Amino acid sequence: MAAAYVSIAESQRRISGYLNRFADAIARQDGAALRLLFAVSSAASLLPVADALSNFHDSSRLVGQSDRIAQFSEILLPLLRSVQSHRLGRFVEAYSSYEKASNAFLQEFRNWETPWAVEVLHTIALEIRLLAEKADRELAENWKSPEKLQGAGSFLMKVFGALAGKGPKRVGALYITCQLFKIYFKLGTVHLCTSVIRSTEKTFDFEEFPANDRVTYMYYTGRLEVFNENFLAAEQKLTYALAYSDPLNKSNMRMILKYLIPVKLSMGILPTMWLLEKYNLTEYTDVVNSLKTGDVRLLRKALQDHEQMFLRSGVFLVLEKLELQVYQRLIKKIFIIQREKDPARAHQIKLDVIIKALKWLGIEMDVDEVECIVANLIYKNLMKGYFAHKSKVCVLSKQDPFPKLNGKPVTAS
Image 1 (spheres, rainbow, N blue to C red):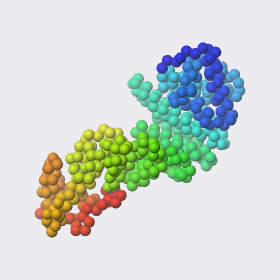
Image 2: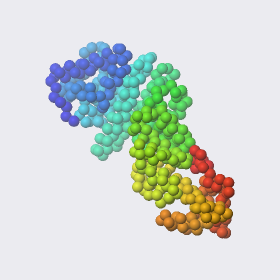
Image 3: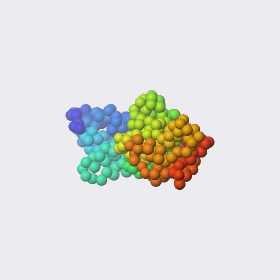
Image 4: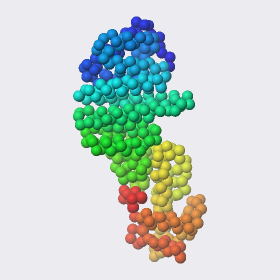
């Protein structure tokens, strides 16, 4: 993006104003004012400074004019370069300079006893992640290895270490943890979350952190539990995130529900159609209907139609495993029909009847395949009974032949 022309005198005035605001904010310990001066990619207020830097090429002289500013030269000089580079769309340069400025600021931060600058570190954490993503896209476009986001993760681990002590600064640690989660999920290195989670949960009282940070933390750790198929833990964490999230923020609510719904489905808990429509999660409509009706074909079609979306979210395998519950519902419907026609023999379901029901749904299966499904349903405690091999009949228990999951995932049965 081309910088607007600014006169030399005006450029000097703008840059000097920025430098004075920086020094003043530190002198007053004004974190709110200082963090805006680090918001390279998101603060519109820095655009006039960026344009000035493109027209005045001796900012180092302005930095060195007074001791109150010069003492922060290791922060300010690379920070100014980052502001200018970002304005010009040179994101690799912007990231590299920003990382230098951030490391220098972190050294200063370690020397301050009070937590006044924690919000500045939060802005730095966000900015360095966003700049790294832009830099990596630029590198990829030029056929170079994208490596800046990984570097941002390494820097944020240093920030986490600076906040993880016993002093008042620790209140800022969870926000940094959440930024690390975003990096690890983006890079596909979610295994790196484990050590950060261990440090966080071992060192801190979780409820002392701000609600927004707790919600984000529970959202990402809940997703991690989904990834590891720990559905009970995933349900607890995602439910916590939903309960403490702002109900007016539909975007955040939708993000949480996108993972909580598959987890709930695995436990036999179905959402209402109203909920799916309200949060634009209609990709789950046919999945839910298949569980209600026992329509295996409908489930398979839903998974096929939304395969890429479910794969990107990491819930495809969770939804695919719901097929066993759909078979349970199908056989239960057969049982209900038989009970109406012949109550005395309702608990004896011939495999041929199941085969015919599946064929009516457009699914061809032989006796051995259906026998395997029935055996799996019994093993997973989705059906009570036994299998009579000679007569090819499933004999259901007369007491609760189709146990409810009662909020427990099938894998835990």
